[in-house]
Length: 250
Image 1 (tube, helix red, strand yellow):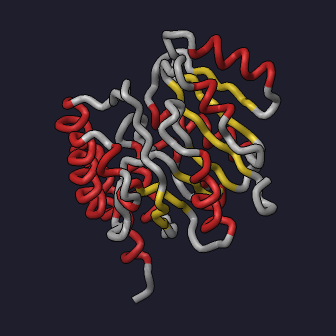
Image 2: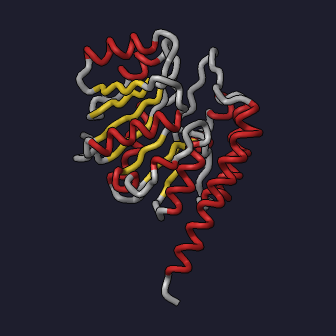
Image 3: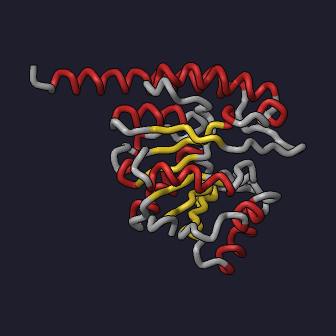
């Protein structure tokens, strides 16, 4: 429990054998439930997770038989949290790039009823410019600027940061079955939250990158996948707003 709220941390995982154990063991003790979704890992990740689950009662392991994407993994985790009546669901990556010490800052606005969804913003931390690879800085800036338009949240930045927390009250307003299943999920989720009139807040979080860092995002994602996801999110949000306007009494 964190300030009388039950907390779950969802961890989507794909081939993270070198970091997943340390990531799970670093999660604060106030977290009630750790929901790990193994998205059909092909390395030793599954073996490590199975051993950790035996030793740690708070871990729930959900295994996908085929790789369905990080968005689909989150849907599985969110669904499990909803079924178990958790108050707040946070998301952390399995690669150790999210500082567990930042978790309370993400949770506080939700516990205080200031926001429905808190999102990490690494650009609010000065160390980002020395830590994040330059190519990723450029990519994040471009996608964040476009996402301001497609999501409707003009105050939000660092749209690709997956370090987030959401109340299950807000989560219930999101059509999880329509959430984009792969890398474009953060952008798509923001648009859906705006449609549901959820309050979103940016929270400074520490960027962490090791010397062996590599991204799963490829050029095909940036130039083929993301434009489709962003356009779809934008059109869906506009259509929803038009429907709402038409239903409103004149």
